[in-house]
Amino acid sequence: MSKMIFVNLPVRDLPRSMRFFEALGFTNNPQFTDDTAACMVIDDPHIFAMLLTHEKFAQFTPKRISDAHETSEVLICLSCGSRAEVDDTIRTAVAAGGTTFRDPQDYGFMYSHAFQDPDGHIWEIMWMDPKADT
Image 1 (cartoon, rainbow, N blue to C red):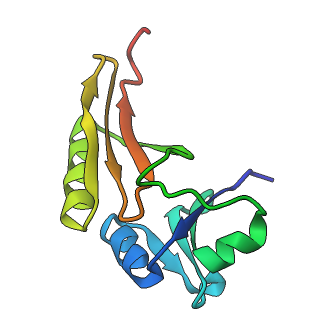
Image 2 (cartoon, rainbow, N blue to C red):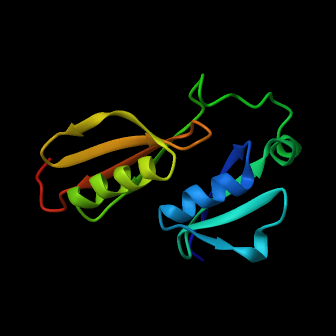
């Protein structure tokens, strides 16, 4: 059986977060979505983002939920098929209500840029040249 990844993220406004990620091309799986959580499909059938209201997220951990605008709890990295797709993804994220996190980084064999979603979670978008000899 293949492994699946579910990235669980606390969000303050579930409908707004769903709209943001839908603008990036993620799709909603209504089977695992209700008023407290939304399953956003990043790469079917392996990668998902579970957007959880703070109340729902708190059911899974006794720890205080960090404010991702103030602290970094995780860096999420997604690969793309080209440099242009990296740049397009960042532009789409900003147009949908996200913010750029840092300047692009170009290492020749790898190119990346990053954005913050409306809740401050950092998403690094990267492309690696499959032919590069690193």
